[in-house]
Length: 477
Ligand SMILES: [Zn+2]
Image (cartoon, rainbow, N blue to C red; front, side, top):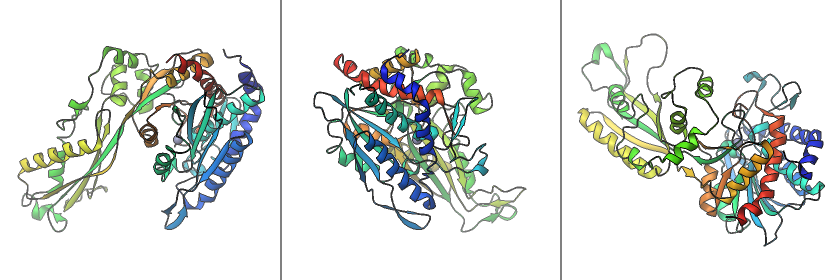
């Protein structure tokens, strides 16, 4: 139990804090739709004003232009700023994004997605952006306000970085972070990002790793035009047959990647590390529920978790140019383009993986004796990230979670990627931690996105308590 004055203030002012989230959710700041751009800009202005009310110094930084839906638009500005400049204190940078995914009632929402709905029976706060990522941003604002209202000294200097393009590829942000690494963020000692979720619905998490991604296309072409199999079957080398042969050599149905050199680069598992996965509060049933069927490769929970978090994976996504309609069309496609990707973990670098994949597919293709033409391309590549959980940044958050929730957090890695995490880690060279507020079933990016009121309130206290814990955690480092 946390009975610090700031926490009591939070409990006593829940209605005010809910009203703040309502205001934020009701600005439909969809970054991926040109017609919503004025709302994204308005959301940034609203957030800047909220931060300034707390005494923060905030700059609205233009990030240039983009072309969207055939129009040239100004990118929504990033909000960069600070609160506190005491050289005796540690400096913590917090990141969040004020844009959201698109949403419409017709997608299957129970309530208007941009009308905030507090369901008092279930204690759920519904609305697009409630958990991703407006709830967590409000959490920081709420915690700072609670400190100020209760005259609690904030024992760290804060730096802010809030963007309005996260759901649309964080355009322009990487350059900004690299530039501010020598400016506004020069004194940053640690970074806290609240923009992911607990693994399940009951145990808070701290996230210390993300997988990277290399995405490939494999083009095979031969005939000048599509052919009829009754006329040219068993006459020509068929591109689709070549492609399926190659695809069968990428990964086994047990998930084992067959491209030589990839598994060899993954660090061997230690007993201590295996225990981290065994301790994560999630069951095989949780996975089966999320999948909607009992089709996990392993029945061992720790193996399933490691499959998602600790090991690379290779997934085949689709084939362009293949016949995909109904009925039986006897076409021999003249050219096909297969798509697959590899999720990367340390120490797999996208460029090295690209070389391994290129060489392997070319060697295997040569063995087919086909006269068709092969082209392999890496369409995009992002590096993996992993942080040390022994750093004081993580200890301050772990202690906060234990105080607020009375539970030890699960240490998780995400199977996907949040590219800006790596940008902060590389540009600043400091420890980066992901401290999620919402639950695994919040439906971020989906219909009926929600944040549980208890996660909003206890999550706000957790963010506050984390800041309060920094000096002691850093002193004992
Ligand atoms: Zn997000």
